[in-house]
Image 1 (tube, rainbow, N blue to C red):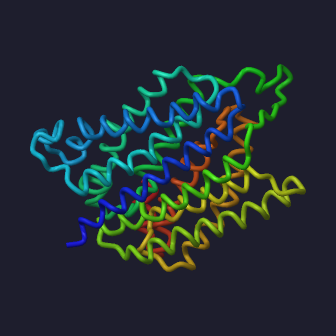
Image 2 (cartoon, one colour):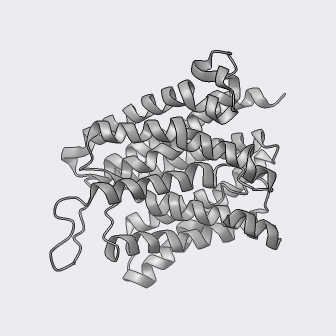
Length: 324
């Protein structure tokens, strides 16, 4: 009865991709803003078609669903095609200002056609599901997978010219519009709330509670990142606070709608510290240039949200399954 609600929720969730376009365009230098926006738009086209043509059939384990030949796409397929965009986005951010256009697009195709559908099958139908794995809104399926893809892309492609000096020191390359980037963060939150609501609905969790979990976790992440930034650098750092806000939001995805809001606040607050700290560590110590911060925002927060979904159950076996 409630499945048709996935269509309007999926349409609202597309606001998240608009937010990503704003966010990434603001993080780059002005000369690269238009190209970044074009990549974000192209990624939507390629990822959606890849999922419709191949990924949906792989996720459903139904060869007849290739190119939607059996006309089974309907509400769940449409909604999941939108959700896949959360996983392809981090790779865009990790390769900003130096990645080849078609290579980046190919990465989005692989994420939507193979990686995310396979992870979804494991988590919601296959061996992990049979072990009792919890991932209501894709903390692992979308965000951890996307963060790992971003890490692979950033490491393989190398850093931007002028990012690191021969003596090992790091140069900060500011984006041209912090205002645009922060507006994108707010837009991503607007798109994330219907995303977790729809996933909770599909998994028979409390979708109203899921919305509250996402909002509270994001707010806690932002406040914790503000405190971390003040202690670590003596001042509020715009991009670190934004990353903490996004990390807190994503940390709620694992158990959204299945945990009380106080637990979401704790998960978000922890994410608000470990995500910006992870960004600084990756950039300064491992020399991984990730302008969009997707490795930390999606990878670290996604991993924490996955483990956190086990921690809130207070069951040792569940924590072990989540870690696995």
